[in-house]
Structures are given as structure tokens and as C-alpha cells.
Image 1 (cartoon, rainbow, N blue to C red):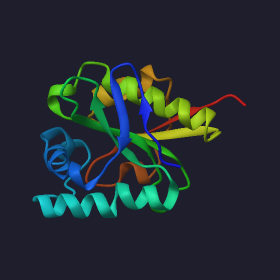
Image 2: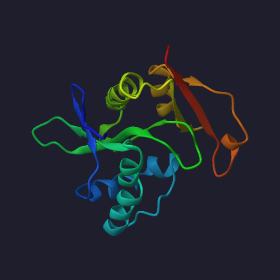
Image 3: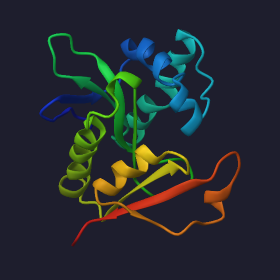
Image 4: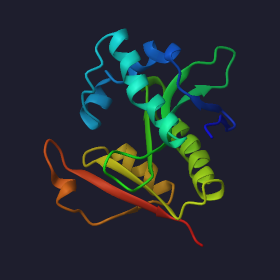
Length: 174
């Protein structure tokens, strides 16, 4: 069921093993490490493993997952990730995203997330989508607010070390 979505400035496509250099750069960015955490991806070999065991495994199991955000330019290249995912042990479909530093503050996450939200509501017929942010990630929280997500009251799980997280939900009307 995995497909490619298009927005005015982006092509949102499944990740492939050819994206390993991009993944290596993204998951070692200071903001990723601070707000998402160290995924033990410190070499191209680690990046290939991350792709196989993470996004590509989720594509195979669920038909959804984090996808590359390619700029529609003369030199198309991934500048971030955005997509729908389900974490182990959770029943919730979650919106996830991350950008390389040079792609931030341009509205690209809002654009990509909007496409995935529309897909979740109209194609997948979901009733809601969840998202999580690090408590200190104000930029990400602003994106979710602009997309119409509501902040949920904290639970014990949201306060677990190493950092408190914020749980958000976007509900669709029936």
C-alpha cells in the first residue's frame, strides 16, 4: 500500500538503501540527538541496518512508515523524514518527522505532515492521529498546534527518563 505523495514543494517517497548517507547525516544531527535520541547509527553500515529494521520493516508489516522528503528541485534530494508509524506496544498511528538543519523554518514539515494527515483521514479512514514531542522542542510543538493537534494531559509514561515528552492528538470528525 506504500505510495508516493506529492505536495507543491515535496515528493514524499519510501526510503531505500540508497538513502543510507542521508540517514547517517540526519540521525546524527544535534537536534535529532537532543529531541529524539541516539539510534546508534554511526556508520553507513549502521544506517543500512536502521533502514532495514526500522522504516523498511514497517513498510512490509503495516504499509506505512517514515518516508523521505525530497525537494522538487533540479537537484532532488532528501531534506527530512515524515510519515505515519506505529511504535511497538502502541495501538496508535503516529505522525513522525525530522528535518536537516538547512530545511528548517521553511514550512516543509507542515506541508508534508498535511499530506500525511489527509492520507490518514481520507484513505486510511483513521479517526485520529497521535504525535509526540520532546518537552523542550518548541518548534515541533508549534507545528503540531498549527496542524490542529491538541496537547493531551501528561501520563506517567510521558515523564519517563531521560526526558519528558508531550503527547498530542488530532481527531477527525466522523
